[in-house]
Length: 119
Image (tube, rainbow, N blue to C red; front, side, top):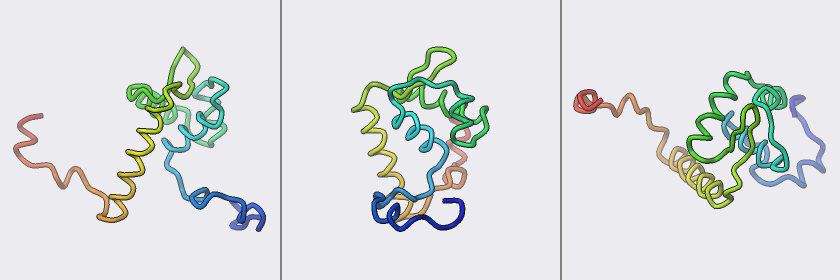
């Protein structure tokens, strides 16, 4: 797709959202989900997705904290809890829809003096 064009057959057979730009977290989750029969090293995931290894490692750690990936040093795999993964995907889509409809929130703009005191 980097050439700016694809074969018309690929276009016709694609899912409606297949060509949307994905953020790095989405790309990693989709990669692991598409390859759920294997566990991967962070460096290999980074190489396959043309990302920085440190960034992939950080994202994987956050995904692990959310229960969306499993980790046995040095390997990573998608969760085997399919309902948890579906729920996370639904929540993500809900946030995307809200951002599109109402605009993205800037959490720093929403911060108040009272919030600063609590922190």
